[in-house]
Image (cartoon, rainbow over all chains, first blue to last red; front, side):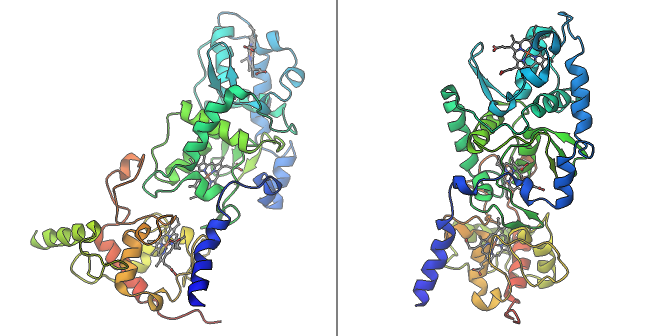
Length: 254
Length: 143
């Protein structure tokens, strides 16, 4: 009897380990306080609206040796950028690389506008990414390009690999223990539906890579350099894993 | 100096398994007993012990405790001192799939961030303090 109870105890945590079943997949917006959810839903209250507004100004501003603005080539973002963020990271045929939205915007900056690239986490890059991302609000995440498969697979491996001094993997928290309490925080499922996000702890908007960096430092693992292929692979895997969930950019997080 | 050398010898013996029985590390890693009060502070500290990120326990003053792991209440009655020591130093020796970090192991880890590279999460003295504290947790939860 005691042996059986012990055996059950040992088996129980393993039984729920693994990928989150589609029916249980959800954005962690639903687990936030009513106050934060209201802040996210109301553009007048969502602090990220300032970033989006500045992004709209940048969209119309001429830059670089081309003297062209984003709008000169892409027109009205509400039409041309609709649903775009919901399928990033995307495969770039010209370079054969997988690019996240930040890298794609920077590619247009350098190659089409003839302007210097914007630094990762710079205010301007966050402004533009928030503005472009906003045009996908409500669109289901839909990365279906088969050329993304190698990046998704790399991301999956990085997600399940143990790392850092604490020897944890992303999957241990986000696949096997979501909904539980890690100290004071509820472990989220970690779907990238709302990025860039306004995070109260940062008092700022930040990218998905910044969020991933935070988790790596928490595991006491050496974070990857901003813009690295490792982050882009993780982003591609997270988007694949969140397929079908609606985009919420810009989300608010504690 | 002499005391430190002995401590290190006991430490290396313990983590290399030579001093460990199957389910326990019976002898102190420092050769001396730990301090339970210091151990309690380590366990409760989110930057040092990190225990309450995953565990809860008899800490009425701590509002935020985890529920990824068993309640530590009464753990000193469930395990011997040596069993507790092994469960802190290297819990994977009992459960290879465990998510609990090995507080006294530095090998077999990947991408450890610079500031912590090559260092165990807790040193031998801190581990002894934690073991002394856990050993003192003999009272079961009052219903």
